[in-house]
Amino acid sequence: MNGWIDSHSHLFAKEFDEDIDEVIQRCLQINVKKVILPNIDLMTLDRVKKLSDTYPEICLPTVGLHPCDVKEDFWEVLNKMKTWAYEPKMFIHQKIYAIGETGLDFYWDTTFAEQQKKALKIQIEWAKELRLPIILHTRNSIQETIDIIRDNMDEHLKGVFHCFGGTIEEAQQIIELGSFYLGVDGPLTYKNSKTPAIFQEISLEKILLETDSPFLPPTPHRGKRNESSYLPLIAQKLAEVKNMSLEEVRRVTTENCSKLFGIESI
Ligand SMILES: [Zn+2]
Image (cartoon, rainbow, N blue to C red; front, side):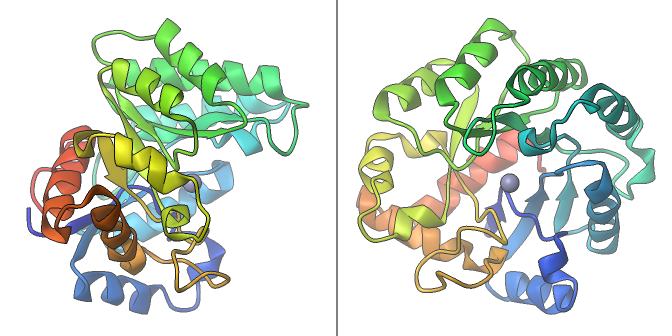
């Protein structure tokens, strides 16, 4: 357990088409040993497969439908995706590591709010049946998402509220669920960010590190493409905020991530 894990990174995105090999090499140089690839929609499944098949030691596939891509045809899309989730033999890994990313996003558009909720509930059922963690995206929707998770909680449901940007009260509700983590990424490093005060209060045992590449690059890379090798910059800031050593942050967050996603050795 002597490396880093990026628990949320879209390295399969078009932004990496030109230089993915160098991006992966930079991860290895800095000891980022595993990268979880949260799927977005039907089109990106092939990209997730290709990347995780090419770099199976590093890139770990997931299957799910992002809330911003839930449209009126979501039922049909989920039916196609279900095959990938339930018969993951098409991946070299012969398995997937999570269901996601799913969740609710009411920031841009609420036209499909009801469909988003239905799609989330279906994916919660997959996660429970398959005993897999669920990766949750929330925007202007944390309380609604917490409520849906709480209503559907059983002894198997577990996961992460990725890119957590809520209040202390919301963080407490998530922790009380018992088997859910909070993901922290680049905004922790931004000037005037409210995130450090929140994460100062949250136990390290409940935190996962993530980059959300290619989005949300940490300081000093703001305005550029984000990549998984920047993960230690977020960890460094978390160590300062929590007054801990970088080593302690690495050890505990890597353990958290390994436990949640069932990663045996890194
Ligand atoms: Zn994402």
